[in-house]
Amino acid sequence: MPRLLALLLLGWAIAFFGSFMAFYFTPAKDFGLAAGWNKVSVFMGWQAVATVLALFCLVMRWSSKDKITRRLAVIPTFALALMLVALAGLIFWANLQRTSPDPQPPVPTRPVTAPAADN
Image (tube, rainbow, N blue to C red; front, side, top):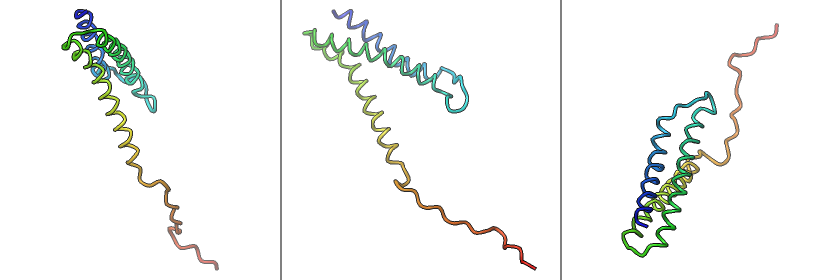
């Protein structure tokens, strides 16, 4: 049981920290609006693997009686929760950065030059 947990923790650490490295090293393939989406998809794919391994570690936590094993098994779930809270905080902060809920009406423009005189 402890060896399986050690393998799960090692796999989680590789997937979790490797997702950040993969995001950094993956080149952006496209231009314009789609540039960088492949980086995000690689990051999210590795984070999905890390999430599944974190859930397996949580199952191992419930099936173990050893205190140290129970504490080690909660680290991946804590890291996942911390990352989700940080993401929610970032989204909340970004929503607070709006200038105003209702835009001001445009100021009417005056002609740049005086109109030509009629003769």
